[in-house]
Image: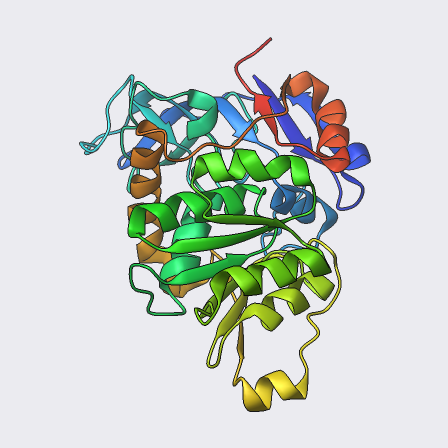
Length: 323
């Protein structure tokens, strides 16, 4: 069957190969055979390829950190899913292959009336957003949250979950053409990340300072969030798109008592909370409350073109079932 192999750690365009591998074995007790349909190419996939991610398989190896497909068969004792159900592949389930065998525990049938490409992106970004909103600050309806990278997969999911939970969001973007689109998704305040934009946010909020800031950028982007936080506010970093450190002044630490935290979805403390967040995200998809635009899809055989597209920018999915 068709698959993608990581052959060495390094440049993704050079180290990922389209290959033919043996079929997986029949599912054993507590297992399910999944026919993979779509799988995103995420930035954490590319970090894994480069050898800088905590997940580090023995090589050569199929990789792929999230995806979705249909149950083809189940092993003895499996009752939570059945053949024909659409399910998410497990987190770090190495989904870049036509068929995989996975533990059935934690699998659940996805809504049948939702775009499968959107379903394929449920495992990482939406639970990250949900937990960023719940695990660091005890927010109440009406509270403000500020984030950068608001057009990212996590950023869009933050808007969706915040709206569903009654929180208000300040969303910083780099391109003004994104403002109307993110407002239509439910962003309360969408502003370009500039000095003028920062002044507008402060003028709009008045005395209502955000207590939670969500940072996917680092560097000066994080500094802007810190400036907007109120006393005893918390900034949580989940990514570092700028690759620059977070600059925080002693003044912010001493007089605003700012806390700086980090978030990694695979930390053991979050393990039991991921599945409920994914289920909540699936319902948001069903009600059109959550949406992530897809720039392009590629078959497995075009993996090098697909990776090059990701590195230029844009959300790319592998159409694993395509010839």
